[in-house]
Image 1 (cartoon, rainbow, N blue to C red):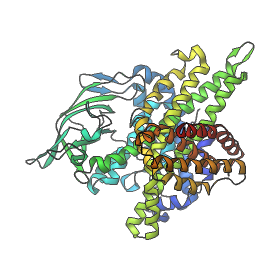
Image 2 (image 1 turned 120 degrees about the vertical axis):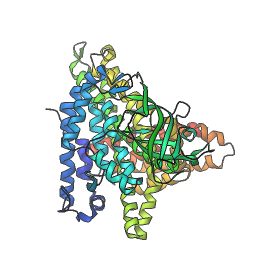
Image 3 (image 1 turned 135 degrees about the vertical axis):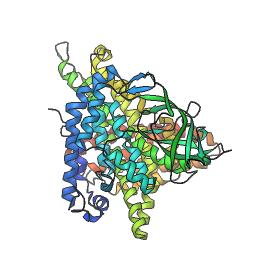
Image 4 (image 1 turned 45 degrees about the horizontal axis):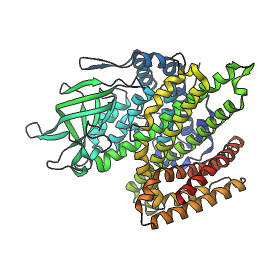
Length: 554
């Protein structure tokens, strides 16, 4: 009996050691729902227990069901026949188990049949599910559609669609990309035309590379304003699957075979406007994409966790020259690096998700109370969450690809064979640094917070929470932060703007390492193991920071 939550103490670490009492109290309306709603906790301790139980259920399903089906799902894949998509048999079983367990609508309010859990707990579930099968995460993770409707939809839309998602009655899709509008979403041409007779919008156009495009309920980005060519003419709509939607084909992909990627035609599909016209890309899609990017970061973490475990197990079993290969220093070093980076990735991911939770709750609290002090806190988190999300996707997907690459390397020739799981993991993780915004786009999204100084405000805030016992590491980190801030000032003063642009990737990588080092120092307060991780990461990664800064200065 495998449990992908209980066998990973590093996930549980954040529940056991971080003080989430204020956040949970905000989520639970100061525990006033107890007795009014099923499963509403009456205390912080009970809320944490509820999270732990739900993660335990997710861990069991992931270990005993989803992971067991993963190879057959990869082999069978989603099938396409004359416009109809059918999930692999294992995927269908996985979906049934998730529905039976009640793990849909994780972040949705209880009044819509949701669990009302923080986004951080949901991110943990996404990591757990992704470790079992990266392709299934793309179905499980599309709960974000319900979250977006809950944030921006009308009360009628929330009651209908959020409840459907929470009950597991529908799967979702976010329908953005077109043949001529990939990352450049402001170039979307799909039209939303007002039907005067039926008093509704109708969608006409073609969409491509749509994850789970066969979903029953989807959010679609379409041009509602005639004679516009930019983002101001785009709106977001809810559509339901019907005969006006033609699935042209599903893509034959390198990996994530259990997740159908569809090309779609719309021939007058009935649509409901979400929120206000003209804000589809400017506001709603950006929020949806940030949620998706956090999910992909968690997906990369889950896949690379499994790759590390496969490599570690193989290195303990495989004998060469009279001893197991884990006893060769180069292999041992690779495994140690993988383990350290997984800890680093998790620190960045869960501190990012917590920031998103605080942003969500402080904004909600301000809307309800008008408290000016709460507004200050809401603005603080508004400023950093987009940056942290971009940084998480940047770092976790790139590092996840490296971990999977090294896992295959440790397996040697056998890792290249389909008989071994690491080949599937290496194929599945490759997409994470591409979809929901490539690594290069995450650099573009993150660089503004570095040059504006917001990064340095965040670093100094977090350094206040660092483990004071690690004086040498703390001083080295503070010195690196100061030098980096000075470098940014110099680059901003340069007349040659192209110089900064040329080194943007390096600048974002430096920011990632500095911020992760800070989070690891914070974690070191709670565990001797975390002390060792912080010491090693700072010892090994700060020299790279110095190298990158020197390269930029020269």
